[in-house]
Length: 530
Ligand code: G4P
Image 1 (cartoon, protein in one colour):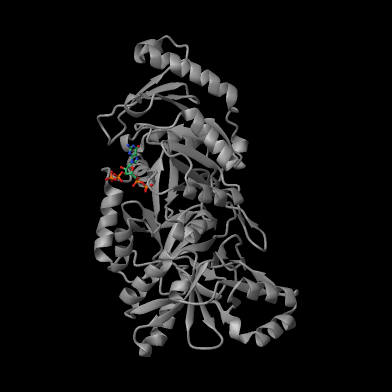
Image 2 (cartoon, rainbow, N blue to C red):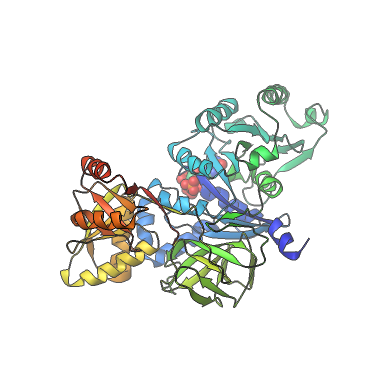
């Protein structure tokens, strides 16, 4: 095997999806702890606090108690390199989450054992389903009063329409939770409630559930319940089938308690063993295989203010192929400009680190001053346009107005930059001097207003408009499109890339335009290729 193939084969790039409060942060922290990337539990939060203390923008996050920013953490375990991409849990930022999911090869879905499938889990799951993403389920908080495990499996299967099979089986729950039986490796995993830090649990290998050793390790009632339940579940659920998992049709389920670090090492071993290595990436021109010699990647996220000491932006690039080396020159296919990448960073959990090298599947961060946009392709020269990074038609439209009218130009520049980062959609109507900002969730307006004020020094308001939605305009007939735009100028705006958009005043307005102009497509998602 070539070095490139070997490096790719040992990478696991994944994200955790969950409803807020299910335990994503706690689980992330424990994964990092087990991966040796952090020493003490609590470090993810502590670092977060430190960051927040420096940035006004982050105040929105803190006051709202939500995590808006997503980050990347890299750690090693079991001779594998894991890239864990964080996703914002709040639904107002679902567009961000969607984009993060285009950059991973599999996901871990965390479910609160008492609450089961919640609204946001379902939404995020559906996004994964669209991409046939392999999903491992982690049912968390078994140390609390939980739903019956059979009911939980049934709920996942019914609500999400995916087959499930337990990888481990819980022994008791709440204060009577003793641990799990590892159904794949025939091990008894007993929880030690005392220690929350390292790997505190007793692991006993056995020859199966009839092993007499178990009689000594478990109380009678717990053991007979376990035997009965496992027999039943083996009758009800299919056996684990790796190809069904990789196709996104079957999810192995682990039970655990992240706060007690319990079930975490089994989860991470499960990822190491079964989760896919970097997968091929679709582009208009061809499918990009990770093993291709030439380096390629795409920008899926832009983040400003990662570090308050550097007022730069970081473009997060998912490497899709090849072996990246520091100093390499890559072409931005959209602008046709070459970038010499001397200062790309890797996100080793402790801090940013200069990337000496990276491989397909890795995420690198490129500091820049606005020349990289979401959806940009970077290559060694080939013209590639990656697909699958959509913009969604905004559900809320507001007019942005600077408090001081003299600062309108500055505000326009700020809005343009924020749109390039994917913070919201920004439209410049052809008629009038307003800027229209579109968001999928209203919280995005709050973040925008705060950032325009703190980062660009332009206090601004977002005022309601009579517009209900925006649709990108496309047509195979350039002449017709021009004609439509000319005749409807009062309802036409340009997005931050200069693509024409129809701003609808009400449903009737949109229906009417669609009826009258059958050659024009009014699209509500737009791929962010060039
Ligand atoms: P999130 O990122 O998905 O929003 O969830 P987070 O990890 O912040 O966890 C939400 C709450 O659930 C936290 O409690 C956390 O301590 C708790 N939690 C996480 N995993 C477990 C578990 O396995 N068992 C139990 N019993 N609780 C768990 P909090 O009181 O909101 O915050 P904190 O004060 O503990 O930090």
